[in-house]
Every structure is written in structure tokens, then in C-alpha cells.
Length: 166
Image 1: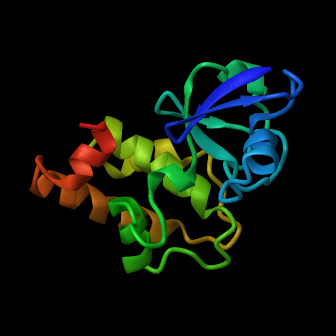
Image 2: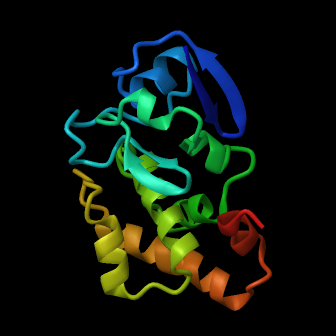
């Protein structure tokens, strides 16, 4: 038995310790927002947060996440209540096919939590492990800048509280 806390909810699951976290979340918890891309941790489609750090869940055994806090795209926002980063994605028409976007948003959210005023180079570095086959990189960067601008404009904003869990 493995105990996981996913999006603030505790679960006890009877799964093999070496099962990739991605499959446990998708198949056992039915949280389908995080996608399978490459299976080798190279494309970023499977990105979730483990204790706030973006990780590639297609190569992370569920045992490595036991007893820790896991956040999926469903834990960042919902269609009815988008996070500020998700709203910036909508405002900038970032998604084309949309397949990689949950991983992109998870990486961008972690970036802005740790660096609320990133430079272009900071954005490039933080997002370098996320591949967008449709090539929406300029829109992704613009969305991150928009969200960062909102954060910089008001350090007491909901975005700041959202990103710092304050």
C-alpha cells in the first residue's frame, strides 16, 4: 500500500512501488489532465509538482512520491476557476493542439512561484524541458510575462497568494 496526497486529498492505493506516478494518478485516481508524451522524461507533458517542484511523472516511481504533496493540473485551477497562469494562457491563445499545455502550465506556475519577475532567459531555462510540437513558444513566453506582470503589479494579489500558498 502506498499513501499519496494529491491536490490536498490523501489516498491509500494498492499499487506496485515502481509504477510510474503518471499512471497511478491517471488510472487509479482518474485525474486525466496530465498527459503521457515520451515515457522518458524528455518532453514535459507529464509534469506535476512534488512538494512544489516540477517533476516528470512518467519516470518517477510512485514510491518516490509516497507521503509527499503532489499537485496536478487539476489542483492548479479548474475550467470554472482558472488560475492566473491558466487565464494568461487563454488570454494569449497559447494552446494549438493543447496536448502539452498542462505540463507547460505546471512548469510556468513553478517558475513564477520561485521567480515572480523572470527574465527572458529565466523563462527559457525554466521551460526548456517542455516541448510544444505546435511551436507556440512565443505565446507561452507572452503568457508567462503577462502572469508575471500581474504578480509584480500587486504583491498582495491572488496570484501571489496562489503561487506561494499564502
